[in-house]
Image 1: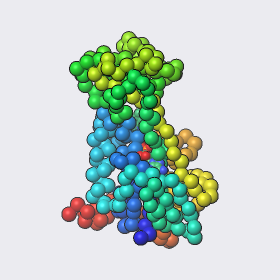
Image 2: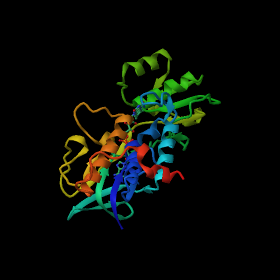
Image 3: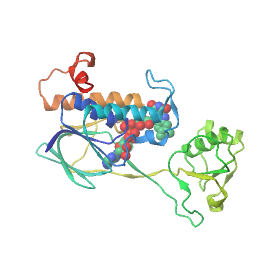
Image 4: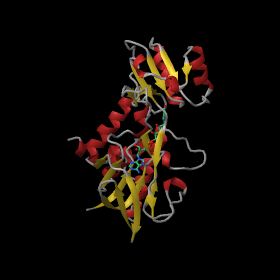
Length: 293
Ligand SMILES: Cc1cc2nc3c(=O)[nH]c(=O)nc-3n(C[C@H](O)[C@H](O)[C@H](O)COP(=O)(O)OP(=O)(O)OC[C@H]3O[C@@H](n4cnc5c(N)ncnc54)[C@H](O)[C@@H]3O)c2cc1C
């Protein structure tokens, strides 16, 4: 089977690309390296988002779920837990090799964000498996809490958990060099900061760790250079979301979904030369009503 569109990455840009691509009747597959969709939203599931139009204060968890529900209606194909390792472009066809198989597609939409992120885990004599790498539930716990990490996320977790009446200790071996709002938050809440070498997990009810992530890159037989509007130097290869770079670009969800539509439209133009550049608006497009029948 040869797909019209292969979307790589299942964050907001990739999810919406796959949905919108299916709405343009292109045979679409979405590949995500992790076992769940959501991309970076998974890092802050319990946080409210205020800058998405019409969604003031939506929880990242709920926004992610809404994106997934929308995608499911489209019936685009989805492959989870497959990391794209290599792409070859031969005779205008893309051979996309994942950790499990090779997929053929006429176009690529790379919505890889900042790259496939593998959570960095800690190897330490004083940890007995209590460490959690997922974002904490912000609530009051039955005993003291430890947060491990030097990242803005770790500092923010510590401050927020303190706000729920928890006794929180932050452990880090790196010097903290964070935004003033986070440094002030740690200081104003009198959050004790110790060296990680002093850490013993038995002392804590729950331990949350955020020390960053390892990245993987995709090999390509050529060089992908980005141009304006998500276009690249390779015909049929488009970029959307945080992966799309241009001067002054904001790396935010709203822009990522806008990029998604642009990339899908560019893929459609590429596959259907001479097609009207302006797609039909959704209120006039019967496919959406067919999907929800
Ligand atoms: C703590 C935090 C708070 C934020 N707050 C806000 C906010 O308030 N408002 C806002 O608008 N934005 C916010 N953002 C930014 C927002 O999360 C990003 O702009 C958005 O997630 C970008 O979407 P994306 O789909 O381009 O990339 P991502 O969400 O990064 O998704 C990329 C996906 O591609 C996958 N991938 C990458 N490489 C491969 C590969 N080789 N094979 C398979 N899969 C691959 C990754 O696993 C990932 O799932 C925040 C980000 C963080 C970290």
